[in-house]
Amino acid sequence: MILQINELFQSLKELNIKPIYLIKGNQDYLIQKIRNKFLSLIPESERTMNYANYDMETTNISNAVEDAMSLPFFGEKRLVIVNNPYFLTGNRSKEKINQDIDSFVNYVNSPQNSTIMLIIAPYDKLDSRKKITKTIKKNSEIIDLSNMSDSDIKNYLKSKINNNGYTIDNEALNQLIQRTSNDLSSAMSELSKLFLYCYNQKSISVSDVNNVVTKSLDQNVFDLVNYVINNNINESINLYHDLINSSNEPLQINAILLSQFRLLIQVKIMSEKGYSQGKLASKLKIHPYRIKLALQKVKNYNYKKLSIAYLGLVDIESQIKSTQKSADLLFEMFMIKFVN
Image (cartoon, rainbow, N blue to C red; front, side):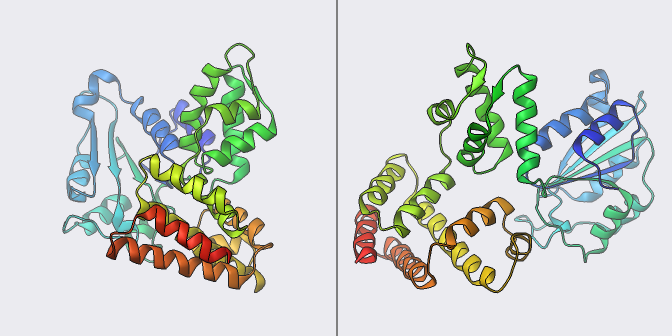
């Protein structure tokens, strides 16, 4: 059964607790909030004996299963948290662990009722072909954080702002989301700064957001893409210099630039073939917010220009790796060549 977060919290409050829960999606803020809610179900005096936390990147799942099968020690419930279950995806662990998946399948099919197993899978997509993934989906309560829409994130932020006695207009809210690259965890961490900055007036404006919220690297690179494609040499070079001077690695900046232009090219081609925003997000495995922004941009760009920019950035990456030329100089040469 798929639950919304508010439904999950209400059921836990009413002590309507199920044996297995699956949290899917990479939303650090909400994951931590959910983790704390489950932890609060175990009295602090009992946590030493009735609470365990396992990371599947370094531990065999059999340890978590064995713990989950044990009865609570002088308590009503035992909480076992399973983190990073990479074997539910197509990913591989960095550590060579021979996971005992069969014992996990058996447990999920017949869980211990006095144990709460919380499986935290911080991935946008699971491999539904795998037996263990199918078994967990069939036998657990699922909270899917990977499909949070723009409106879901806006509503959550607005609710948090209002509950703290503040107001925010739509333009300021959109700017906050844009500056934090539609990442709820980043937006929530910036809210505390905004609350302090706007303490006297209790209202948050666009200028407040611009003054307080630092743009993420992804957002800065997104602005850089716009400068590049619109032939704004001075703005492009100045922003590139600023990013380098802010201790960002040239290869990292270039990699994000390449990723942005690759996405624009893909969206340009596929949208012209009739792909909708939802189908593009699903097919390219990209967050819907990035697809939305890309669709807005590619209407004004032609394929040839996007391709020239992409190939120029590939050349920069090659030269950064193989020559002693400075990244600043390489980018300036790229911009002059691109504009001409």
